[in-house]
Length: 139
Image 1 (cartoon, rainbow, N blue to C red):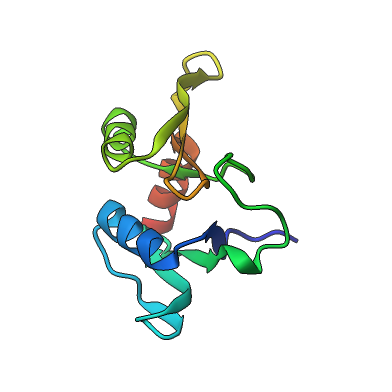
Image 2 (cartoon, rainbow, N blue to C red):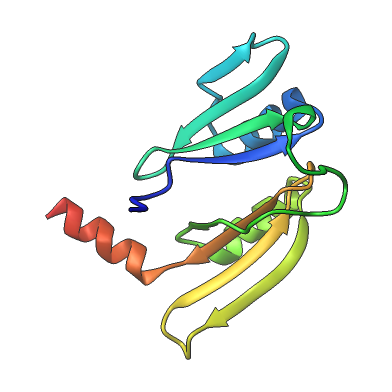
C-alpha cells in the first residue's frame, strides 16, 4: 500500500525566497521550477540517500489556510547530527517548535522540530531504523 515518501510539499507565499532559503539549508540548487525559474509557482529539490523530493508550492494554490502560524504534519528527516542540524536551522531563521526529545527509553530515537520562515513544520530525527535499512540496502 504505502511504499515510501515520494514528495513532501510545503507552501510559501514567496516561492523565490523559500527556494533561496532551502538552497542554503540543503547546499544544493532546486533542479526544477515551473512556470519559470525567474517567477516560480513551484520548485523542487532532490536530496539524501534516497533522493527524496521536497516541493515548494505557491501558497495561493493551497487547499488550506497558509499563514504565520505553523500548520501541517511533521515529516521527520533523518540526520546524523541532531544538535548540529537543529542549530543550523535556527541559524538560518527557523524558529523552534519542539526541542530535542528522547523517544522510547534511550533507544536512539530522538526528534526535534522547527518552523521554517514560511510557516512549514520541519522535523529532524536520529532514527536507528533508517540507518539499519540503509546498511541492508548496501549489502
